[in-house]
Length: 252
Ligand code: SAM
Image 1 (cartoon, rainbow, N blue to C red):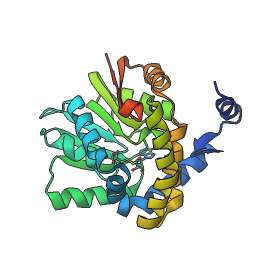
Image 2: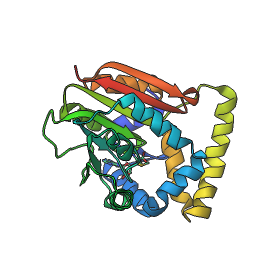
Image 3: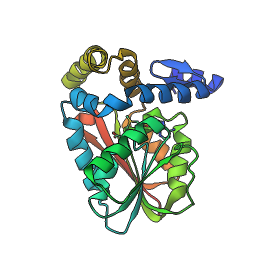
Image 4: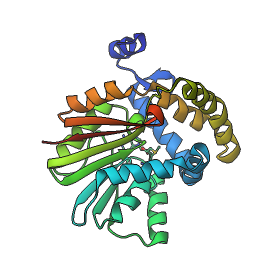
């Protein structure tokens, strides 16, 4: 346990970017961040990642292997990027997100693109309003690090999965490529907040996004948390040396 982890354990605080705050404050602040960026979220994703997030999401969904007739929950689904890809298979997809502003953008995009088979539900990943064993798969992309109690969200994901169901998580992690790590540091701490200021007129929101990436546990720690929630056959697949990772686990 790091010193920061010990402090959090002692005070019950959680991380909000580089700061430690009370759990309720994190939930409220994350909500505020995503409400502020919702309208420019998709454009900013393209700018910040140089369009790479599209390839990561394609790869992620190909790992999930959605099939027609399945029911899939896309947690923290936001503006629908993962759900739209999942729905191409003919699977029914429930997009659940705590933030109504992000969901609204997602619903409008789905309507404009004529994507069917989706439903949008306002829900907290920590306390899902779905029956135990309902889903064939649960996905969460770039969402878990924003959740206040990650362990609860993992336990809920496990609960709503059917036996034999699969969990897939796409998230920023820690790259092990030394040269790239330095460049990536410089880019994310210096360039991303400036891009946020210029395009979304919100440097602070994008500073939070970068800081929350830094505070997220490395691949092996997060794999352990997935196992602790009950999942078996847990794997972690690094992308860009681990700057991004796909974690998977099974309810078997
Ligand atoms: N999955 C989408 C994607 O890949 O583009 C959106 C990711 S966005 C970075 C993070 C999302 O997590 C936001 O839409 C936010 O509202 C949602 N979120 C944060 N905390 C949550 C929670 N406790 N339960 C459900 N969604 C949450």
